[in-house]
Every structure is written in structure tokens, then in C-alpha cells.
Image (cartoon, chains in turn blue, red):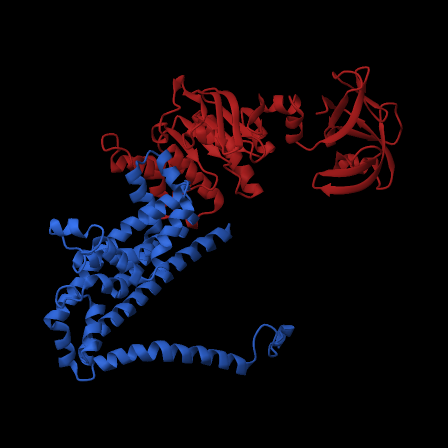
Length: 292
Length: 348
């Protein structure tokens, strides 16, 4: 070759031999196929086993519609609430120094550490008929356990960490220089938040919200404890699926399950898109930074 | 606008950042706060800005107490060390920010904002970058945009925190000359923080040398360089050789050389001599210090020699390249050192 470029096969210093590479890749692919792809496909195969009509019928049946509605309502309340909680918690932790900060961070992680069933039981103990505030609630005709408020509370609890966990490292990395600059330039607290802080964290925030939403709609354990499984009233999609399955109504069970599977796929797609965007922005920043 | 800093103290836990500090800044002057890292200079700047609250003391803006005035209402311009430009806004929007966040009553019209922003961008000679994002600019450009943004609100005081610290040497030199010219045109009271003595001496009207939360000396660049008030100032404002000595009859003796000293008899003293204030000679005189050249290093236009001296650390001598060649100095050669200037301080 002209110029004496060495085009001989590279010596095997930094890479494994071909058989080893094929073996390792093969194991990884087989694992993913067996444990992820096959079950996912089987959900849709089972759902459509007896044709379109039955699939659709299972979804428009009143109990199913009620479960879908309840799931959407729960997510519609829990996600915005945790958006606000997560944002304020992350703001406090990332921008201020105070006593008990590490304790607060640990508390935020608590819902991840506690079993969802325990999370549900907490609310039964507090608001249930035999619970601490049960009698008072009964006197005032307020229903929380075995009703929608209980389901929302349990969901808020289990989805609490997502937004905060996503934002804390991001906001800590960004520091508060830009906020201080905004203040010196005369911006009020609100102006600073809307014009400087929020635009800087919007992708991280979206990412947290997507994950929180997926969990809110798919949560089983905690909701199962507080829901009471009243058909057409306090069943979310996951609970409805379980009931159908236990009644050997496989087509309907898988039809509803396919909705959750679909949600998972959409979530994954959104998540990858947000990740791709943030990485591209970060790469751009780095590229410009190194150009100096 | 003049600023008076009255007995300001600030602690961070056990660390004393500022210790009962007293400083008057005249209207329209360009003042440098100079000192090593951790000396409190940035804390002082942030206290003036209102980004930090002092534990004790008072800040007067034009004679009026501003200690409890919120940073939003202080009307200061602040340029951050790492620029702190709003990364999601264009250069134009960055500069316009201070005007856009004003309350409706005092907010200028869109055309007025446009005119003002372009005027400022022309002032910093970057009008052609109006539509770019901060990530697309070089460090020097970012710094100038940060300055334009700070000036947009027509501040009465301009505060700059290590404004050139993150730039390479060449850009830094250009920018500080440019800042000096800009200040001469606008006459806005300005305070900048730096750890670079050359920068402070070149740009500022007056230099405040700080160490460990206290002011060591305040003066014009000539005053602090030619008449350093303390050993710290002397050492901080350039390279220095020190000789430990004892005082006899009002003279500090180093080898055969003697320097007038104010310290009492047989007190320990330290003699400071700058490397470029030493003459080399092959002939022994009664006031010279004997030594042997051990190293020579070429630094562009100057040559730095290291001379081994008995009873002292290595002494550095700086010569111009011409003098070095005229003298024909060789490594290993015995020489005599004649300090032209020296300062004697009592040993601590």
C-alpha cells in the first residue's frame, strides 16, 4: 500500500476472538428474546387469538371501560401532583444548603425501597374502617379506602421518586449561576423559574414524568391493597386483568394486558427519544466547549 | 456611584472569609481585588452585589445604606467567572433579558429593546452573533456577551468575578485592554476580582491586595508594586528571593552585603530581592553575595539564572537576553550578586 499503511489484520490485543464474541452476543440476544420479546409478543398473540371482534369487545365492555377510565383519572391526578412535589423537592435539594438534606434525599427514595403492598397497607392502616382516622372519616361520610381517593394516594406514593430522582442530579450539575444572573438582572422569583430554570430542566422533567406515568398506570401491588376490587368502580387496568385471568377469560385478560404492553412500548419510544435529544444537546455543548 | 464597605465580616462555618473589612470605592474608578484563592475577594464582591449577606457591617451605595437591599433592586451589573449565560437563549435574548423582566410600567417597547440590544452588541463588537446560542461561542465571545448583558440594565456599579480567569493568555490580554478602554469611555464604577497580579496592575486604577480575609494594602498599581506595605504584598506582586538574616547596628547582613533595617539589634529579619533587581559581576565587591551559577533557562526575551549561594536557598536572577549574551555567563561559573533594590522586613 502507498505510504506504507499497515493494512494487515489487527493483532488481537483490545478485542476478544471471534467465537467468544459470537457466543457472548448470542447469550445476550437469547436472554432478551426469551425473557422480553417472546412474552411481549405472546400478549398480543393471545389477545388476538380469537379475532378482532372479540378483542374489541373485551375493551368496550363496561367494566373494562370503567377500568381504563379509572387508570387514566389516577394517572391524571398522580402525575401532575408528583411533578409539582418532585420539582419543589429537587429545587430545594439542588439549590440550597440546609440541615437534614441527606435525610430528605433518603425519604424521597423510600417508595422505591418499600414493597408496594406495604405502601398500600399504610393507607389502609390510616384511613381504613379500623384505621386511625377511619371512624372520623366514616362519621363525615368520606370514603378513601376501597374508593378512588385511596387508589390515587397509593399511586402518588409509589410514583413519588421518579421526577425528583431525575431532576436532582441535573439541577445540581447545572448549579445556580444562571438563576443568580437572572436575579441580578432584576428578575422576580417567578420570572427566574419560568424563563431560566424550567427551560434548562424541561427534558429531564419530561423524562421523569414519562417514567412516573408508566408506573402510575401499571401499578398493581399498592393499588390492589386499597382498591377492594369492586368491578366497574375501583378496578384499574392491572386489577381488571387479574380478575379476568382468574375467571379464565383469557382473551379479555390479554386484550386489556395488551393496552398496558402498548403503553410500555410507547413509553420506551418516548424515553429513547428524550434520551437521544438530551444526549445530542449535551454532545453539542461538549463539542463547543472543546473547540475553545 | 461611590461604595463604602463598613466593618464587614463574613464566616462560613469556622472559616473566616472576611474579617472586619473597611474599604471605600470612589465613583467612576476601576478597582481590582487581588489575592490568592480563599482570601475572601470573591465573597466581598458577592456581598457588594447582594448575592451574599454579611454577618456584620454595612454597605453604603452613594452614602445610603444598601445592606438589606435585595440583589434585584441594587442595580448592579455582575459578570460571572463562568459567564452564566442563559444556555437556551440566543445571544440577543440573553442581552435583552434584563429589559424584558422589568415590570410593565418601566419595560421598554419591543423596538426600543431591539435598538438597545444591538447598540450593546455593537459596543462589544459582536453584533453579528445575535442569533447564535452561547454554546456556539468561544470563551472570549461569551465573556463579552456576559458583559453586554450586565450593561443592558444600565447598572450603577459593574462587578466582575475573575472575568478573564477561564480564557487563554492571548485572549485574556486582549480582553483586559479592551475592558480598560471600555471603562474609560463609560466611567461606570467597576470592581473586578483577580488572582493575577499582572492583570490587576495593568487594568486597575487602584489595587486592593487581600489575604486571609483582610486587606493588606490599598493603592495605585505603582504604590503597591514599588512600596509594598507587607511581605505578603511584596511576595504576591511578583517573583522574589528571600534571605534570612540577623540585624546588627541597623543593618541586615547577607553574606558580605548589608541592607538598612528598621528592626532592633540581633532581631531576625528577612531580606526580599526581586530577580530582575540583581546585578551579576565577576569582580568581588565588599557588598556582594558570592555564589555559583547552577542553571540557566531561556524565557523568551529574558534569561533566568539560578545561583547557588551559601546559607541560602537557590537565588533566581533575571537578565535580558542581551545582557546575558554580553556577559557571556556560563553554568558552573562563580559570580557575585549585587542587589540594586531590597526590602527588609522583620521575620515573623
